[in-house]
Image 1 (spheres, rainbow, N blue to C red):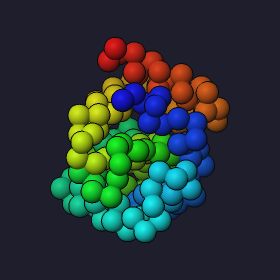
Image 2 (image 1 turned 45 degrees about the horizontal axis):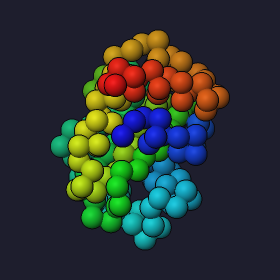
Image 3 (image 1 turned 45 degrees about the vertical axis):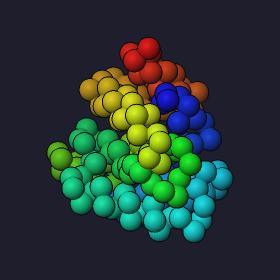
Image 4 (image 1 turned 180 degrees about the horizontal axis):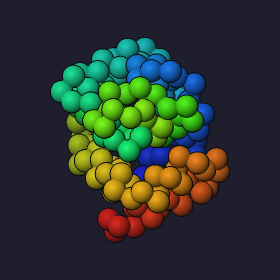
Length: 157
């Protein structure tokens, strides 16, 4: 699975309204519901799964980036995600203590564990690229954002 596939134009929220970590995750999960990729009744389960992962260590990995995720979600079919951006920044208990502006949320069932790991590697490659991070933080055009995702995907081809 590629970033381009998981975080397509319809899976982007470029103006997150949330003011905290929990609200941001919920807003992104609700977007999955709107897209028909998550049942409304499963939002609480998804939040609980993400919070369980967060209790191990924050997924705010620094440089304004967070990767909230949960694997082995029995209520999921496949791997689904949302890319969100906050202009204001969200307190996210990041490792560097800085607010988060870019959030890559991913949920997967047990059968897609390998795809889930591939997505985490691809997001990590973006984390190491300062130019891409700056571009993602400022671009308002989903097509330009997709081009950055394509570049990251190509590193793994």
